[in-house]
Image (cartoon, rainbow, N blue to C red; front, side, top):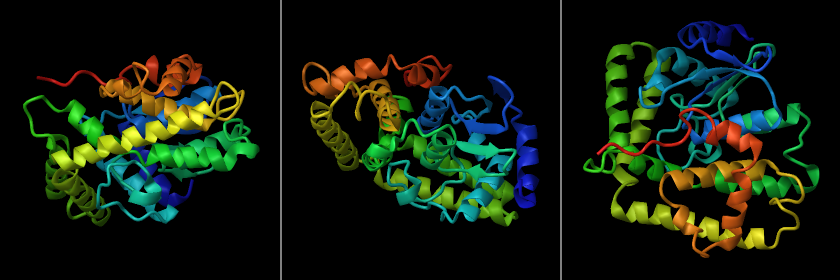
Length: 310
């Protein structure tokens, strides 16, 4: 591992030592059980039955803001050429929103020294190293298009509204992150890297609190999900085979599976139930039987969203 990243990874491993999943492995995954981006990575690892070191971080306790973690992600974002994200668009796509130093997942390959901070690139890299079964060449462009659709969905509004108490303002989750950044800036503001990371994160969450949770924005987010699933239903109707691209599941099936399980968790399964989107409904019944999704989400401790506190 390059010395500049080794300097940051050593205290991170000390803070979050983790535990091994499967046989010995040089792959270290920093993730959260209920992070949808983490779930996608775990699903790809499970599909290929790859061992890894699991370093689980608690989002709601603010562990993804730990200085040891943020320093490494900040440097990895810089080395990858990803600008820090200072505005929230509701989606998780690094390509369109920038790099966030305070989120999961992050993968560290202790042998090569590579550090990846974008869940999409992590999944593609893992699959490529394992033989590329989830990205067959004949459908690679179409699969990538599906992955981009999933990554651009406005997940943040749906999650944030779901986890706040019923009598709290809808932007409470984002506002709590702004307050967390203020506290961390007061404590670590003299460190240039941490200051840059926390200032960008504060600006991002403030933009979310200001613009993503009024009635108009929430209605637009729900309409975007409705439209995406309606279009998906048409593509499923035209498919040849049990999965989106033939006889074998692809990365598109895994990504959509994570998305649709999350939609159930936030109370949006009615979009496709009761005959509204019959092809999506039938596909969901297949997806929840996939061993990779069962291992990564359905049977993974803490992966499903708990009911909001009253």
